Amino acid sequence: MHNIEPPNILIFKEDGERKISKVNYYSLINDDTFEIISESHKKVEKNIAKIESNQRSLLDTLPEDRQKLATKKLNWIKPILTFESAKSGDMYAVIAFNEHYKKYLKEGETVQTLSKKELLKRISEDKDCGKSTRQLERYLAAYLESESQRDNHGVEGLVSKAHLNSHVRSDDLPLELCHPKKKELILDTIFVRLHKDYIPILKTAIEDYYLGKRRKNVSKLHTIIQLKCINEKIEPLEYDTVYKIVNRINPYVLEKLAYGDGGTDPKIMNTNANQSFAKVPLQVIEIDHVRLPITVIDENTGYSVGEPWLTLAIDVYTRKVWGMDLSLHDPSGFKVMNCIFNGICMKRTKEKYGTINDWDFHGIPTVFHMDNGSDFTSTYVKSMIEDVLHSEVRYRPIATPRYGGIIERYFRTINQEFLEDLLGFRYKTNPDKNDRKEAAKDAILTLNNLRELLVHYITDIYHHDVHKGLPLECNTPCARYYQAIEIMGNPPFIKEEDEPYYKIQLLPSDMKSYKNDGIREENVKYASPETTRFISNKRKKNCKIKFDIEDISRIYLLDPESKSYIEVPSIYPPADEIAGMSRKLYQIIRKLLIEKGEITKQQIPGSANIIKGKELLAVVVQSSNS
Image 1 (tube, rainbow, N blue to C red):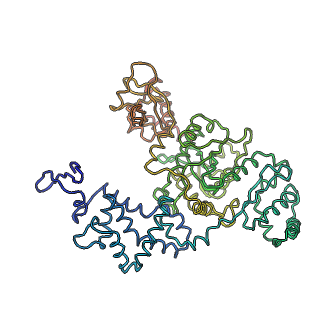
Image 2: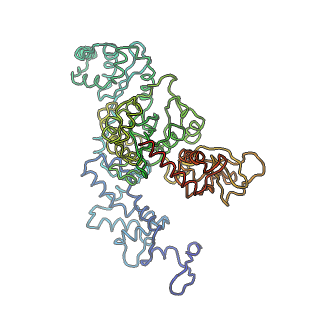
Image 3: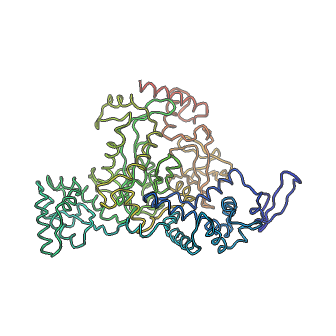
């Protein structure tokens, strides 16, 4: 293509006359001989795939026959959806229609000359369909209505409403249990499926009799509840019903109340306040770090490189994992950023890791609950959450290390149900140096191996496993989430094309001087022809930069005029030599080079020095493992 002069395109023919010709845009793309190749073809396929949503959350919860019926309806209306996109001027939709639904076009006919009414008639007459045009129009309307409420979820509008109503319940009522002496303190919230008249009876009986007693007698509690029901002239509850309800009270709450003043324990007060406050998905997120008791090895040398840190964020309402970061870096604001970026973006786990289910939980939360560590209270983290995401930051009370029961319990679950079966796992909670060495001898997993296994565990096992803290009728994180989005719609999320913007916005920033030889940041020099206009003879720091400590091969420099960031590669060491290298690893290599006299403290290592430094590091790692 040489140029565009709407509605015509100037093209250069490489064979034949080898000259520039003018052709009509629609004539070109409707021509049978017109083909697209390479990257353009991939874009067409991607556009076709957009009609079939990758996030098939509701369909995955349906019986197989219901899934097949919804998919059939979608296949019947897909030609219409593609046709309407083509009519609106989408070139890729035109190509897609010609490639997949050409059977609906008569000889010499094009998408532009075909009417929607005629297309509906031809689909209806197709032996593979057999539905009337009126039925097809109803399916199309249902799809578009669902799509308008939640992008990429139009197919859910094709699921029978009668079936949905039989599976999605909204009559789970919250039973809030308060401290027997401090009624303003909510200790636990249990969802029950009973008439609302039973809620005050259960609440009073459990709080006044059952909570705080060392010896808890369910039979006596059942008798008390029966008498109260009779007084209120309602049907008394069965013993099994009462037993199941009290059996779902948080055991930690019962223990603290029985053996101490558990109602004033900040862990109970704040954790259950979170639960009470969270009424929808992504309203409250708990985030914290833990060092996993398993040794990982270097993927190149095979030597152990230590125990990784896991940063995890869990949604209080659904108990689904929202975001994670697994790395060898110590807890920091940057690890928090990685976890948050993972949480707000689509995970694409089927594509990246081959999971059975998609990790279809993403978006921007309303509130972040974090502890008072410096990695969470830093200005960088607060600015990232409040200024970029426009969310609220809430901190745990000071001197309450056990606060955050939801995420604490999940860390234990990861150890017991996931890590214990892996080689390199360390069983002792307070190990000495020898214990870690023993675990390291069995280690066979790299950090990437462990990350992939953890993603499979979260996506395909944990999200679909029964959770005691959830209502009986939707007692898995996925079921709880799907029920919520059916009633309330999808939580707010960012578009795929906006992800690069958020990635840069969430990175830490600094002010630097642009000198004749570029910008120096952590003993790396960055420059490009595009950014030499920022050179300043003055000593003031005139440039705002964003940097990624996981990859020091580039920084991002803010252009104050265009208000956009320009990617600036490292020139010394060259970007291709340190691509993907973390700041921590670079500092270790540079320190080794200085100790061996290869460079001075003022020097920046070159390509040969980087290679030498990697060799020195391999020797150090080998000796530490022997």
